[in-house]
Length: 97
Image 1 (tube, rainbow, N blue to C red):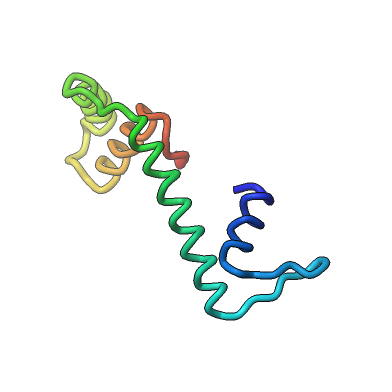
Image 2 (tube, rainbow, N blue to C red):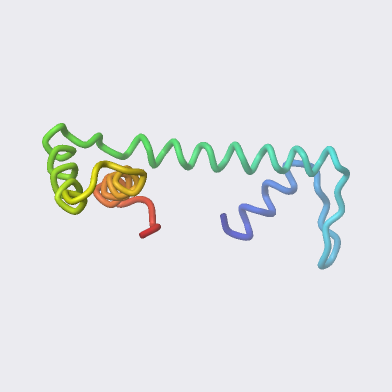
């Protein structure tokens, strides 16, 4: 969210800007938080709608690749985490390594 969007939502919540500062009642801060959550939820929904689901074949390839990494030990939390990270990477999301 950029500064203009921030200020627009703050004004929509009834928060007033005075010089370098802002003045708000608790109820206005709560409304501001609700507006931010709503905006972020909508942005996340847009991203999800643009993603195409992985095919069974793509999932199988990812699973095979990750399973090979863990062939010497039984599936563990680390295996599940590596698999989840591989799915994220395939979708171009995530960020943790």
